[in-house]
Every structure is written in structure tokens, then in C-alpha cells.
Length: 497
Image 1 (cartoon, rainbow, N blue to C red):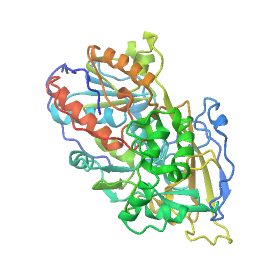
Image 2: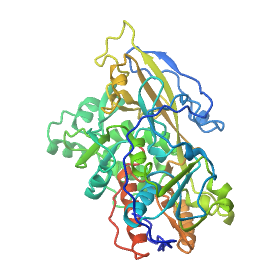
Image 3: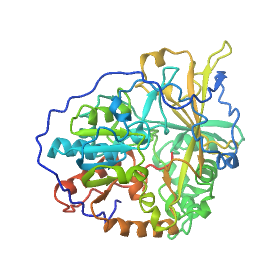
Image 4: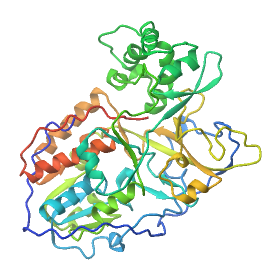
């Protein structure tokens, strides 16, 4: 599941150093955002699950450079920073043990482990203006903790990962449940559990199933028998049958990938989840929780107060590469094709996301079953073709919201659209991309003094826990002098939800 031919990374330390005590940062600061203020989207809350205005898929693939135009980033508070992070290349040492490109999960794990276990000095650079990678969250101007790069939900079956992240945060138990707004056989909308379960088929198709045996029989009567599906549609039909495929998976897949299931590899829909029981949790892992003070605080506590770790933000590795200090090892966590752009190979394909924010306030006509909220759950998927967004996320449902958000009469929602350009989120799985990645992988294997780590370097979508474990295990290999150990089988990630 990981880079089978990950290069053996040999760490060249400039000297042995004694690790100094790593104190935890627990302060709050309110720094102004250097970006220009974007538009604020306000609306009136009615308690009705209306689609409102939306953009077509064509619009979403032809947006300009401002991919954050739909979000209000004018206030991002609740996190700490060090002023030196914005000093560019000024004030740096002449040499570091590691220069780490990317301040996300992989980069911060390498810096933290290197300091704590070997006393190594690291320089982390990132072209963004924050740490935490795509996990970055903040408190917006309405007092809600939101994520800039889409909702993140931590869950894991790996004890090593759970123990590791607990070093840097307190956690609030949370089991994620996803609902979908789908049309039933009478062409009326129903709110049903996703993944599909007994309740889903009963509400949508009047299936009248009440046990696992009955649910299995209902599915077996509809599933196609195809031991060798050639595409995503054939694969999905062997898992779900035509009714669930049409209602839940077909159009959602098209919105997510801009391709119909029959145009995609069979592997894309080979593991679509269909439950035979009544468990409506999205994940079944034993450890499911949210960080008490948000995800960004985890990364602050990993690196911020460590004197062995220097951070520089708004620094583009490729532009500043000739001006960077010397190092024993470069740890590259960005897109592997970007590293080899000068080779003239094609770019790997990714799907990206756009978020459109709306703030809603209640009015006297609110007679919903969930007063003060826009929808009944954190994540409501829209699998049908009636709207072009894939889901609406309402962060107020998260139990780790600050007190001001919980007490707020209003709420903030984000409509999420899939698009073909912008931040790289999801690798596009097809034979051409796999073959191209293998060519990049061969180049990486022979790249001296560089260790490629993380989802972008692996051209593979990772859940958060998988990204942590991937980085920890590759760090183990680096610490062992490049000796490649047997890595944990990560299993399939969630992918687009």
C-alpha cells in the first residue's frame, strides 16, 4: 500500500546533539491574515434543506486562480505562530541535518522524531502561510472552528498512531455519521444513512428488511454476478445492485470524478461500502475522536517550542532551492511530479475541491427538528444529479467547537464541489497515471540525499492516521540508516466521502 521501492534514505548528521526538553505550546494568539479579505456569504436560515444557488460543473472547472473565493478567510484566529516563521530565509543557520519541504503530517513527524530521538536540527519550509498541511483549521469571524481544506475526521485502528497523537493533544470522543439526501421510489426526498444500511433501503425502496439475513437476501437478489468487472459500474453493481447504485453511487461518482463509473477503473468502486446491519457509523475503527483544540494545535505542539526545529512559511522550495542552507537529507513531502518537473514528463492527474461558505441565522419561521442548525448532521451528502455540489458540511455539529460557537444562534455551512484544478486532493486512478507514477517512482529511488514521504510523494490518498503511520515507519528506516523494514499494511483509505 506504500511505496514499495521507497529509496533507502541515509541520514548524514553534521554532529551529534543532545535533545533539549520539548515543551508544549498552549497559548492562543489572534494574528491578522495577510491575504486580502474575501467576500462574506450571508443567508437567512429557514431550517429547510434547500439547495439554494449552486454552480455548475462547467463553472467549477473554469474558475480563475482564486480558488478560495467562496470562503471568508478574513479572520483566522485561535492558533499560535512564531514571528520568525515569516522571516523568509533570513536568520537561518548555514547547515541543518534535515531540510523538510512541507509542514504537514509527514514533515512535522520527521522534524519531531528527528529532534526527540536523535537530537537533529531541521528546517521546515512550506509555500503556504500556515503549518498543518491540509489538516489546518482555525476559528473564523463567526466563532466557528472550520477547516480550510475540507472536513477532517480522525479515526484509526493503529495503536501506535493513537498513542503518538495523544502526545500532542487531548481528544474528544466523536463517531462520524454521514447522511444522504436521496429520492425514494415516490420521487420524494429522504434523509438516509450512508453507507447504505437496512434503514437506507427501507426508506428509499420500501424494502421492509429487519435483519442482517433479510438485508443480505435483498442485496443478493439484485447484485450482478461478475467475477471480473471491467469498469467502475460493473464493479459497483456486484456490490450494491441497480437500485442503490442509481440512488447513491452513480451520480455522486460522476460529480466527484467528472467521469461516469463505466469510464473509471473497476478498483475505484470495488470497495463501496454497503452494510447489512444497522450500524450507521461511517467508520468502525476502535479509536475515533476529535482534537480538543483543533488539528492545528497538534502541529504547534509537535514543533513550535522545539529549539531544534526552525520553520519558514511562504517559502517556495523550487524558487529558493539554490539559496537554501546545506543539509544532510532533504525530506520532500510535495507532489512527486513537481519535484521532477524539469524532466519533461507529464503531470499526474488529481481531482481538487472548491468550498462555498454560507452563514445562516435563524428566523421566527424555523420549525425544524434541529433548531439552530442548517441540517441534522455534520455531513449531508447529495448523491443525486439535482445539484452539482457533492455535500454540505456544517461544522457546528462538531463537539470540539469553542463555547462561543456552541452558544451561537447562527451556523456556517460549506457546499463542496469537485473540480479538476487547484490543490491536489485525490489521485485519479487509471492505468496511464499508474504507469506514469511508476516512472517517477523509479527516479525517486535513485535520487541521492532525498527522501520522498507522504501521500503526494506516493501518489496515493491517505487517511490522517495512514499518513502518520507512513511517516513514522519511513522515519524508522531513516533512523536505522536506510534499512528497509516490513511496513504495516495500511488498507484502503476512505477516499472522497
